[in-house]
Amino acid sequence: MKATTHTEVYRRFQGRLAPARLRCLPLLAAGVRVALKRKWPLLLYLPPFGAMLVLSFIVYTKFLLEEGLAPAVLTPAGANPGTQVIGSLAGTLIEVHTIVFWSVFGMGQFALLIAGWYGAGLIAEDRRRGAHLLYFARPLSKLDYLLGKLGVVACFIGAGVLVPALAIALTAVFAAPGWSFLTEHGSIFLDILLYTSVHTFVLASFMLAISSLFKRWAYAVVTIAGYVLLSSGLANLLSWLNRDQSWQVLSPTRCLWRLAASIFEVEQVVGVRLDWSPALAWSGLGGVVALSWLVLWLRVRRMESVA
Amino acid sequence: MIEIHGLSKSYGSVRALDGLELTLAGGPVGLLGPNGAGKTTLIKLLLGLLEPDAGSATIAGQDPTTPAGRRALRASVGYMPESDCLIPRMNGVELVTTLGRLSGLTATDALTRAHEVLDYVGLDEARYRIADDYSTGMKQRLKLAQALVHDPALLLLDEPTNGLDPKGRREMLELVHDLGHAQEKNILLCSHLLPDVEATCRDVVVLKQGRVTLTGAIEELTGADGRGFELELDGELAPFEAALAADGIALRRERDGRRTVELPAGARDADVLFALAARHEVRILALRERRATLEQVFLAGLGREERP
Image 1: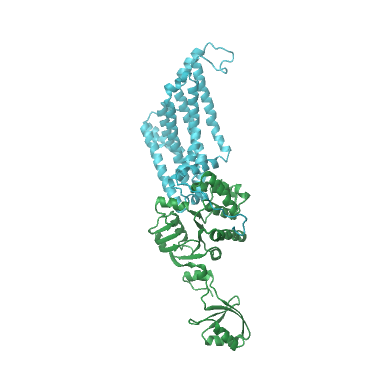
Image 2: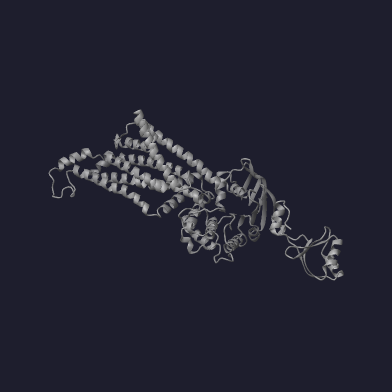
């Protein structure tokens, strides 16, 4: 039997529905697929990946010079009698930890743009288009919904921060003679994973929380940009007025800088001293995450009941 | 299928549902009521999207107030919301597949089912277009397709013909009728359009101010009571009309020109009409038992006077 106005019959589903576990994964996969439909925003990844190539080459060169060899591009005329001196200088001046720090620091700025582009509309657009009406009529919990959305933005932030840092560290591993970098500085991989995980989680949570407050992507982006600029400005102003760097805790981006400096053992960056308490930075970031998830929970609970 | 006992829900001082008692065995059921009667609140409570203030509601024994019950219940219910709802930048197939996955289908099953239900609702090649660009009729069909993707036991359809042109409306009603009758799906159809309910449903529930005022099979509610008749007459009617009046029977002329009579309580059959007609040389060309319209039933359910 079929509807008289239609040509196809209704077919019954003969299989079985799976129990409701990890429903965030289909949501994550669908979110990434939809985000990748627009190709030109991927240009946001050009600077991080360009920088990754340059920094990886510097690391590669450092280890060659340390071994007394010189890449052809540095010695076009052939053997260079000064390679021993240059190698010694390279070993002293170029620290892989510092380069990885500069990588995560630099990529962190792009990560903000990436998170803004890919994350600001994730919940806002769902609300505007009424997608939550469809989601919450399914066996999908609020936590699954949030994890699915968090996963989407985390994938894009992670690709911009984690991949370049890992590539640089892997270059060091393969360029260093006899796996010496891995045996002596292998913990850098844990440092990278720790920092990028925290960075990604904080940024993604914050981005989603802002996104849940609006119904339009553009409003969320403007709010995020405004908050980052204002909090950084305020943190700088209060630090300068009070001559106390602890006020930097007011800015989530400064907290992330401080965390990176602590993990990769760097003391200052672009003229900003990063010698204030790392515990304070952890507290600041914890506060941002707690507030973000509180906002998210309340907003998503409201979305579900409005659905 | 649906058991509701003492269900109450208030929004501040507004009482949306007031101790609702209702049992629905299954099949296609129309949920009628004026704005603010509590229809949408009832659907939200059935889906577990709202917490009741008091009472209970279960679908196939599943309680929507517990997380496990809610998950089980939502897997067996397909919901077609009234308002516009799309997942941004997805085409028809992607949208239905994604929602199928969220309902518990595997990736392969979800894709297969998406194509099957999109075929069924008549979204042919349009399924590969971004749904944001669909017409209203196509969006309604897409909403029905996503509600069907996991082959639910119960369909909650909220104003499925909203915004459709006459052709689209007819097609949607045909689909709902097919699902409710040929496919034997349990359907709860919320609508304020009585012809939609009459065309697709077997039973009807009328809500007013959060309470059930009328429930039953449409066939029975609109059925003949053996006392009302429609007549087609030929001859001089004045003496016949006077004779009827003397026997306590009023011959009425309706707006559409039909003549109707209502026999007094206790009258056994329509023989009295034939006897009087023969005596006054009036020929009865046709005699039909009069049936109430769903509109009359609905208005009676709301406790308002029937229209003349």
